[in-house]
Amino acid sequence: MRFMTACSVITLILGTSVAHADTLRIGVEGNYPPFSQVAADGKLSGFDIEIAEALCAKMQVTCEMVQQEWDGMI
Image (cartoon, rainbow, N blue to C red; front, side):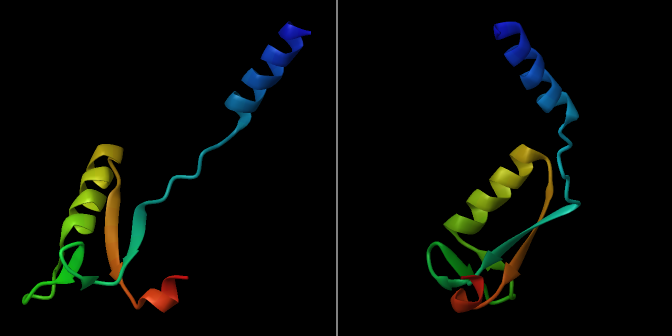
């Protein structure tokens, strides 16, 4: 029974394909300093932005911060 369960798990793992996006889009509002804000040059900055960029670097993916209203994210 354990052998059959192990074979089933291995088959599921090997047979499952993982979707890979070229760019990970992250929705941010930019109206809550110091977490997210829009600088004078129009770039997003703040703690949440830095965390997102660090996670993207760790995952080795390209990330795009998309600024939009909070109500549009829900």
